[in-house]
Image (cartoon, rainbow, N blue to C red; front, top):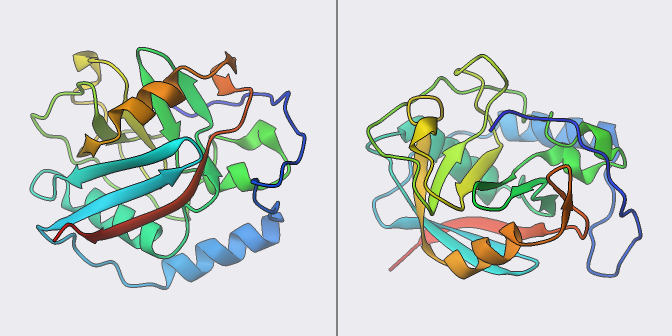
Length: 204
């Protein structure tokens, strides 16, 4: 979904929260990621998101969005998503995460980060229904997808042809429901919800 600037009222450090990264550390991570080869998603591979509220698993649609699938695999398997926030939550709409800027000490820039590259749109006839995983982008430019993604909490076919679908939840929809139901202020969870670890693994 379009990125936005949202304030944060909850800055208290807890034991299960990650260390804050400096902007220079974030730049180093992005530079390292950009030097790693991108490899296609295999037919038997799935994504596993271990969140602070439970585990979400989703399958890929490499036939529909091969570049978006491969990009997610590279980012996930090289630690890019670890300890990033679901920085935008809208019940009966989406939960959105994948921004490494959510790991710095400035909550006002959450939703504006990227890994240093963009992806051209890969539209398909897969509808944005509940459980679909799709790529967020900047306003008014369909070719600005990068690391940020959203999971549909409800059916919204009006998003079809505007965002690139690359996966669908196969396990953990109840976790999506739980994340979507957390208290928010201006769509930002008041109690942070993290992706503690993201990986793409074989389902066999």
